[in-house]
Image (cartoon, rainbow, N blue to C red; front, side, top):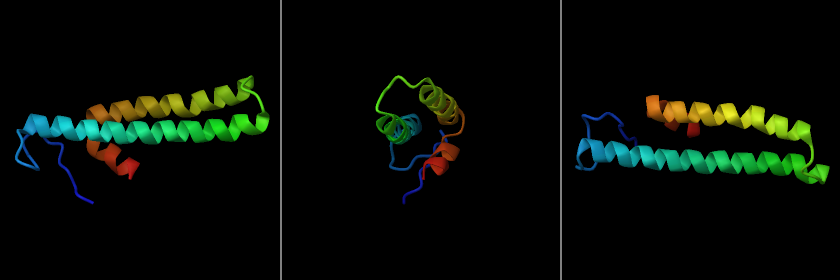
Length: 90
């Protein structure tokens, strides 16, 4: 796997530093979004399909408690420390 640098003073492919960092952050954000949504769907399916209904408050509460902080933390890591987010996603 190719390692990318998110530092603004380094480039990987010869683009300007800001363009390269922006591209890599976008790619990382897309990867994080796909994993987040797939995890959300899997958990929702595992909870609601056996229950046979979407009217289960406890399951909605569980999904919210599990995935809202995950979304917030992913956004913070993307903004503040994309290298750590990349490691956590791999």
